[in-house]
Amino acid sequence: MINVAITGADTLHAGELIRILVNHPDVELAWLAAPTHGGEEVARFHRGLTGETTAVFADAMGPLDEVDVLFQADVTPGAGRALMAALPGDTQLKIIDLSPDFADESEGFVYGLSELNRRRIVHDCTRVACPSPIAAAALVSLMPLARNLLLGAPVTITVEGDAVPDAGVAAEVSQVLRQAQSSFGHEVEIVARTAAVTSPRALVLRVETDCGVDEALLDELYDKYFDDHNFTFPVKTVVGVDDVLNTNKCLLRLARRGQRVTIDVVIDAWLKGGAGNAVHLMNLLCGLHERVGLRLKASLV
Image (tube, rainbow, N blue to C red):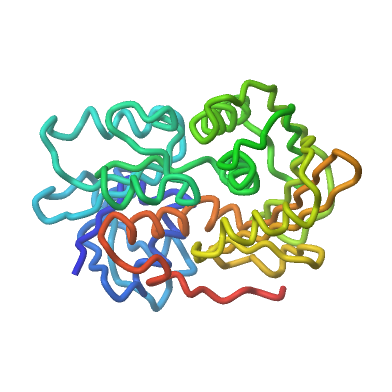
């Protein structure tokens, strides 16, 4: 069994993590640290866990020698660095950080986009930094172009619904695109557009750029690129948020008009954009099949 602990256990993403991990067949929860809620029942705070766990929050980190994987679930900037400062410098713990602190791959972290860095995560690291939700969705949609050296124009990302792009998201996307395609040097613009969505956890993007490759070849490139990935699926029909809510899926739909390529993307921002991706990364770090514990059912409401 994999012994797992969580810091920032009273956050929204931690609630989603616990909901997945209490049913993960290879995980045992060691301790859940939430200093301001020490001694409180987890299920009384994360109310969807009623009947799932009798765990209580710890008011500080527990013994590290009881832990194989440590999730840092506070997405506040600085939370990841605060955790690293509190850990022994020689720690060999596997660490998965949901804050934006290590998106630049500092302090030995690898950027946790499996569609780009799966091999590195499996073989070359013990520390993984989760992408921000908007960056995760946008980057997945662009990976087949970047990895085939086909990104040669500015990128516009339109975010629909309640999601508000953070000022650093465009920089995060640009940085990772350059990692995937070193020649990429164009502007990445992120635009927010108010639109009705069926759930606050739904993340809907339209990603646009110019590309000279014809639509049939683009479809082939995308199908081939994602053929051995377990959670990302190019589709021909209009993508809908109901198909991804409460799952770790990402659905992509390509369209082309002239030189303009449009990619519509939908994910669940709390799962594929957060806790679900974090558990996926844990599976990779620990040598498990990617889908273990993540066969989550879509909601139709």
